[in-house]
Amino acid sequence: MKRIAVFCGSSIGYNSIYVNAAKELGNYFAKHNIGLVYGGGKIGLMGTIADTLIENNGEVIGVIPHLLRHKEVVHTTITKMIVTKKMSKRKVKISKLADGYIALAGGFGTLDEIFEALTLGQLSIESKPIGLLNTNRYFDHILLQLDVMVKEGFLKQNNRDMLLVSDNIEELITKMKNYKAPEMSKVVNTVASK
Ligand code: AMP
Figure: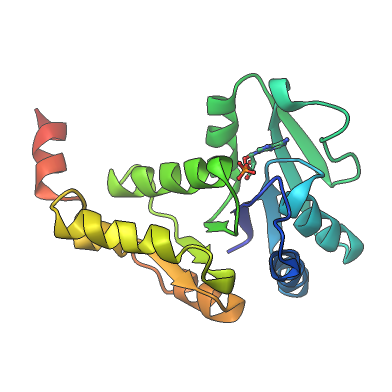
């Protein structure tokens, strides 16, 4: 994986464990020559991971929609900033640049981005690995909800399994490297061929 898109909070949270995880991931990327693609902000965990990579001479590409190009939040010292017209165009651009996705702790924005990546995977529009860094078991309740969705028949187990989870960076990246996308389900195939 040459570049990974990271989705994470525009806040830093109340516990320093999340900032430390973002720094650790930034250091890991720099050490292993993995470029960062992200939302282009200088605030929150987004800013933390971008700063860590810049300090270590890593590659950082920000993709920001025009709407968010606000002086106070936009990062100004990264390798490259791409400005898109709309939020939807930004997602397409991020996906073109990245070989996989990782989510760290975050809010609505982070969940929106990671679930969109999962939805594209579910429809076989993309087959990139999607990882969740479950620092401090932050995502445990979301993971439980996914199991409810499988149990109640709204999510297929093999699609549930697309989401790779670990609280350890090395282990998460190994899972991502070994990832094989699930076969497209028969239902989707039938609909698509009509
Ligand atoms: P949230 O998790 O709600 O804090 O939102 C963070 C995610 O949404 C990031 O991964 C970004 O891609 C996007 N995002 C939210 N706020 C900003 C911002 N001010 N600048 C750039 N991207 C943002």
